[in-house]
Image (cartoon, rainbow, N blue to C red; front, side):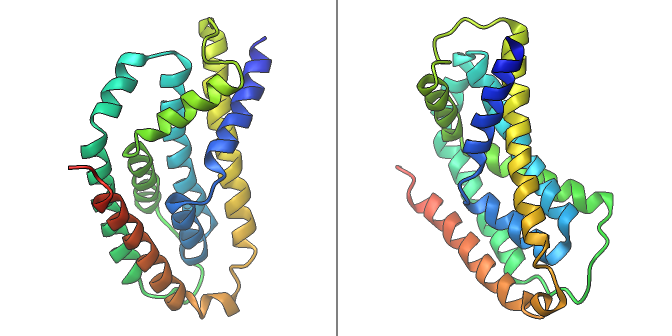
Length: 205
C-alpha cells in the first residue's frame, strides 16, 4: 500500500516541479554559469520546500496551511524582494571563463536561496491540495506510513525533475556557450527582477 502512495507522490512532485518558472530559470542559469552541482543543489532546495508543503497537505495540517495562506501578502512581498536581489546579483555576475569548482558555502547558498524562495510562495500548498484532491487523496484517511510514503514520493519526484533538467542543461555547457554567459546573465537577471517586481506589484494592499 505504501508503495502505491510513494508512486503517486513521485508523480505529484514531478508535476508540481516541472513547469519552468523562476526556480527553473535560476537552476538553468546556475548550471550553465557555475556547473551541474550548483544547479542541482539549487533544485534540491526547491524539492525540499515542495516536500514541506506536500507534508502539510498530505498530513492534513489545515491549521498550518491556513496560517500560511493568511500571511500570503508578507510572504509574497519578501519573495518578490528576494527575487529582485537575486536578479540584480545574476545581472552583475561576471561571465564564467572556465568550469568553476564550488565549495560547500556556495552549495549552501544555492540550496537555501531556492528553498526560501519556494517557501515564500504559500499558494504552492493550494496546488498540492488541488492535485491531491484531483487524484482522490484529498479526503482519504491515511496512516502515518502512507502519509510518509506520499511525502517522500513528492520529494523524489521533484528531485528527479531537477536532476533531469540540470543534466540536460549541463550538456550544453561547452566553451562556445560559456563565451555567451555575459549575455545569459543579463537576460536571466532582467527576467528574475521582472518576476520579482510582478510579484510585488500584484499584491493586493
